[in-house]
Image 1 (cartoon, rainbow, N blue to C red):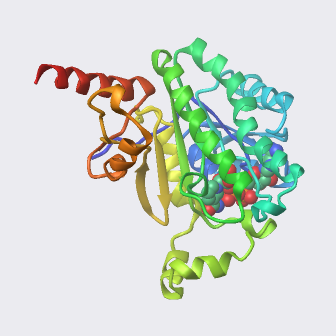
Image 2 (image 1 turned 45 degrees about the vertical axis):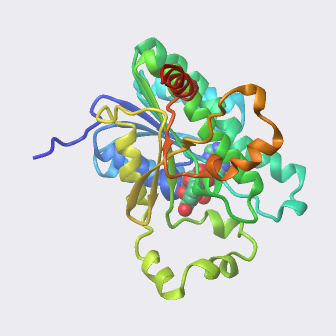
Length: 314
Ligand SMILES: NC(=O)c1ccc[n+]([C@@H]2O[C@H](COP(=O)([O-])OP(=O)(O)OC[C@H]3O[C@@H](n4cnc5c(N)ncnc54)[C@H](O)[C@@H]3O)[C@@H](O)[C@H]2O)c1
């Protein structure tokens, strides 16, 4: 039988845990023994989640600070240290939408979304990182989004922020390698009020182009935030040893999402590379049949170096 995955004695911070996915993550981690900092700017919701966790015998404290400021990030981490004396797991989850077609997005909408998703990941993770690095252990989960990695309409600000979160995940995964810190990204799908507060324009019309109504009804039965929280909890547990990867929890389908490089066209020599010779090989450049998934930039360069050496020896 598989050993249960538990967080006894560990401290976890979940931002935006007042409702939706964050709430499910906080409740699940507490159920599994973690001491949880329940963070959200919505005070009443924080208090409800803390009360719910305590009522079931778990340990939780409230944090009402905003992830969107440097001070807020420090205060959230300090709450973990003051209340429980450590920090092993951080889930950056807080956020909201500010929707609109690209030509209509205001600077305020762009800034607010970059602040709450991308800059917040710096504000909260930096103070947490110092603790984790000095302890030689940590798990960080960045909440990215399929809207950022695969894209759709009406959310260019959000897509850019969430793709940035993926980039930050990769960067920190490398920096965490020698310090026992694993950093991964989550691409969730779940029932929540995030899109009710800020509806994506023409969402139903766009969705109906690709997903039939009966399929949509089936998908709707598999949107419980707990389906996502299970993946989140795994990714911030000691059982999870991968780092720098992204995982999608899509209606009960769990999958890795990765950025790959095609085998591409390796020019014979650099002297004969012109716009036209490149264009002549463009299908080969784009052909995804053979590809690699570089973990870090050095993997990509090393792959080219290996092929150049092979070329020389034939
Ligand atoms: N629901 C989905 O299908 C989905 C899909 C992709 C990505 N996401 C991402 O997952 C995360 C959670 O989304 P959700 O659907 O549960 O949303 P939600 O709106 O239910 O919950 C988000 C919570 O974040 C809080 N919050 C907002 N600004 C904050 C701030 N400055 N500081 C602290 N807390 C703040 C809100 O008060 C709210 O309680 C978000 O990052 C979202 O972008 C959700």
